[in-house]
Every structure is written in structure tokens, then in C-alpha cells.
Amino acid sequence: MKKYLTFNNIAQVSLVTFTILGFLLTSLKLPQYGLLSNLIGQVFWFYSAYKAWKEANQIGIFITTTIIAFILIFGVINYWFLQ
Image (cartoon, rainbow, N blue to C red; front, side, top):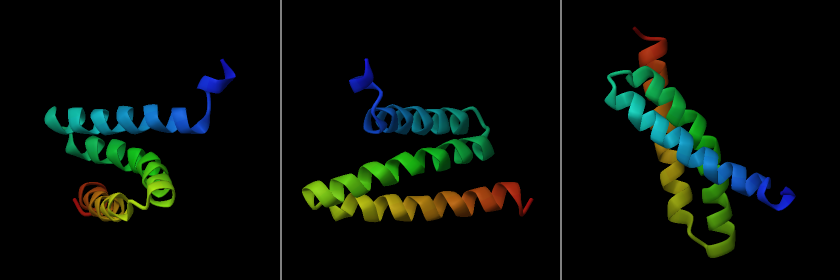
């Protein structure tokens, strides 16, 4: 049981969960909550992207994750603080 509760496994499940939840909330016309969910998911995307960069030299994933994180931060600021 312990081998299934590693941080990597939790990160992979959380990555999928928060990203899908974000898309679902956005499609249900709740974009402010979809942005928050996706932003939480970005923490796990960063972990996975960094790991892919270091282990397989795939820096493109890390760069894309960073850009998407900035876009999501701008969206959160736009929906939660500027309206």
C-alpha cells in the first residue's frame, strides 16, 4: 500500500483531477472557479514538468507550464480582483 502513496503518484492523480475540474467548471460557466482549480493543478504540472526536464531533457514542457501558469494568474487577478 505504501508504494502507491508516493508523492509522484499523488501528484499525477492531482494533476489530472484539478485540470479536468478546471475545464468542467469553465464549461459550466464558472470560469473564476475553473481558473482557481487549474492554478492549483499547476503546482503538480510544475513538479511533473520539472521532472521531465531533468530526467528526459524535455524543457518545452516546463516552458509551456510556466507560460500557462502566468496566464492563469492573470485570469485569477482579472476575475477575482479587477471586477
